[in-house]
Structures are given as C-alpha cells and as structure tokens.
Image (cartoon, rainbow, N blue to C red; front, side):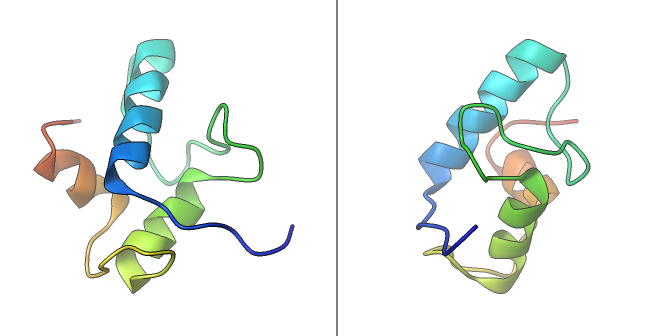
Length: 73
C-alpha cells in the first residue's frame, strides 16, 4: 500500500459529508474504505487523528473531530 499522504481537516470533513449523504449516518472507525479515496479507511483516519500522524495535530479521534465540526451522531 505504501506511504499515505498528509490529511487536512477540510479533506476529512468533505469525505465525511459525502459518506453521510450516501449512508445517512456519519462514518465510524468501522465504516471501512473511504469512497473516492483509494487505499484510505476511516480506521486509518482515526489513527492519524489520535496519534498526530499525516500532518494532523493528534490527541483526537474521528468521533471527536466530527463532533467538534458540527457533524453529530
């Protein structure tokens, strides 16, 4: 799979909004692959948010990131 590129908050929110539009629910770590982002998974995004990898500050999670940006579950 190789190294994954940097992530931005705007990118994550756009993917989450698209997921919500398709699925009718916000993504979780169990939502599997991110549509339109080959090789990307919601679990990997959660890990990057938690650990501060891929250009993200860390000390967060997918759940908290979405909640902080008005995407509630």
